[in-house]
Length: 88
Image 1 (cartoon, rainbow, N blue to C red):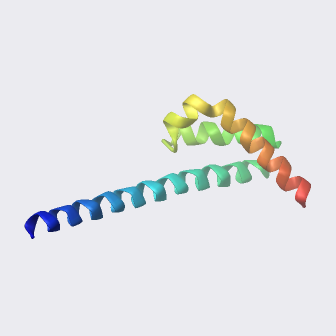
Image 2 (cartoon, helix red, strand yellow):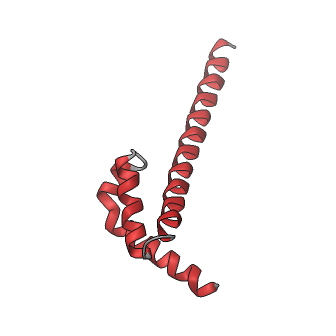
């Protein structure tokens, strides 16, 4: 019985940690998207995306990922913003 309780406790910790990781992941991308929108109020989209990437790296938001993939993220976000404008 004790072994079963330990396994259940371990599984709960794993799921709780995965849930927390997903929440932090989602919050990071939300912060990035909001920064892009904020900067777009004063700057062209391309500049706003670059500034948002720098902001996130400087503030530890998906820092490692953005440092390695900023070109890719820039292009994806540029396409997303273009698609959103075309739908409007």
